[in-house]
Length: 104
Image 1: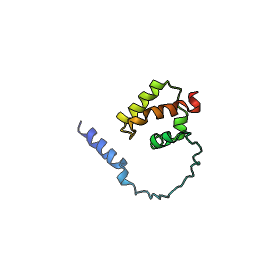
Image 2: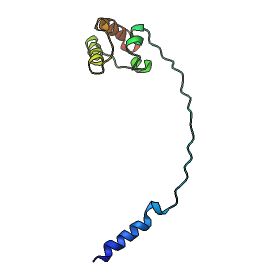
Image 3: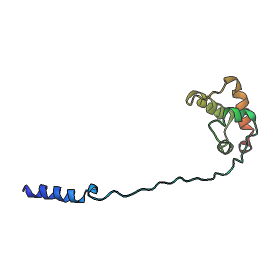
Image 4: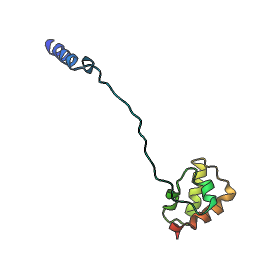
C-alpha cells in the first residue's frame, strides 16, 4: 500500500516544470493611437463640475431624467463620491443637464 503514494510522488516530480529549462521571454513596448475627443459640453458649469470624472460622451448619452432625479444625482456625486461641487451651483448644474440635447 505504501508503494502507490511513493510512485505518485515520483511521477509528480518527473512532471514538475522545474525539470524543464526556463523559456526565454522577450518583452516589447506597444503604442496605440486613440481618437481625438470630439464631443464638447454646451455649458461651462458641466465642464467645470462634471468633466473631471465623466467624459462628455458619457454625459451626453444619459437617459432622460426629471429635475428631481438630476438633483439626486448631483447630491450623490457630492456625498458618495466626494465631488467638489458647491451646493450653490446645484440649480445651475441641474438646469444645464436638463438643457442637454438628449434630455429634450
